[in-house]
Image 1 (cartoon, rainbow, N blue to C red):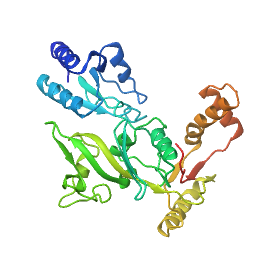
Image 2: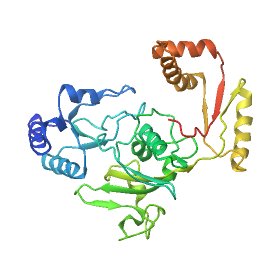
Image 3: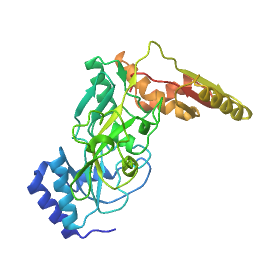
Image 4: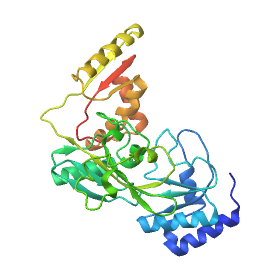
Length: 318
């Protein structure tokens, strides 16, 4: 869909008047949002940065007025799956990375309520600072990626499917009204952050991988820290063994001997996972590495081929 320049220009003018010029990006600054590691391309009309719910409501009203599509992103680090590209040309991108507050953590029941811009690293540091006996189940993505962004795409963490940890969503609909899933709509409810289903139909699924609303906050359960955790990697060197190993893993998972998500990948997966860690570790010892040289080092020191299984709770790491 192509959008007339006059509509975009009028939108940008009114958005700057309503929000402040610094919150509306165009041309060169907006082009940075068009970069995508998956090779797709889109033309973006403008980028608007919102810091709170009233600002989001203004952007919705202006997009409706000028008949422009709106595409919200959190941190925009959906690497390999679109990054922060809209689904069509001519959209206004709503950048929610500035909404980065952790609104509440429950030290007894182990829940956390956060905004779209909150990253995995931010949650990790917050839990350390508060010295809580819980950790957030992280994904294998970057530490700077959004928790809510990954959640809404049904991301997979190391121990769970992240959506299984979801308790409640707070969502702004297209008309600017706010709905809360579960018991969030019940006045003075004492379990809105504990029980995800509420009364009647569960609306949560409507807002996963959809465009029915803009999620402005979410509540997730945390996992309790345990005395010890183990990580191990199994190398499968012969193709004929793969089916048997996978079947054995099924039995271990069914019997609860393993209680985590098993990652299956080849040596390329190992390299892209470990190279950033080698890069960061080298910096601590004053050794200068590029990410490319870190990858070469991994290949030289871990020249293992074949399929790899990684079983890891990854407690408290990002």
